[in-house]
Image (cartoon, rainbow, N blue to C red; front, top):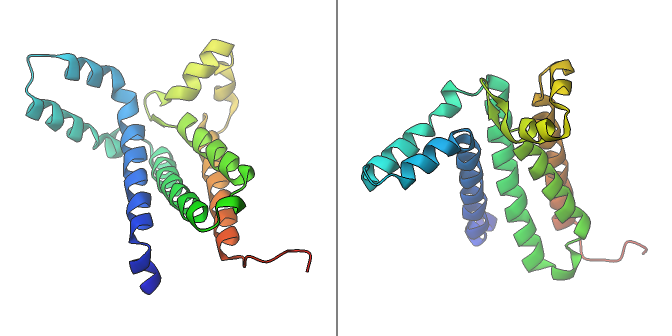
Length: 176
């Protein structure tokens, strides 16, 4: 319990990053609507906030179960990874390897590529694949692109494991 009390800032950071990541992932499919809404002068700020907050409920209505689970899991894991990296950096500045930062970034990117609702699929991934002509490849995958989200969860889970292992490892030379 003392560890939690001493490190409450990192817990708050993990929760804040997770909530922000989840909000972005949920609101991303409605970015055009939100842009028009917030640019409109005919709607009050309270009305704009009300609509924006009500769109957060689209996680339950617009996302498939697998998509919602991967989106929430990725958001939580990104928050935990960011908090662990800050903790590790403050504790052992020179031990934070480029590999752990790069792997966390790759996992977060895979996770963001998989964001999408049941109707439109993976927003970012289908946009990217449409440019390179590979959108038809998603139809051949058994989960229609949700595999990217699962891969993101696996990568982020692995980086969380690596960061925790690095934090709990004593600061001694491995050769001895």
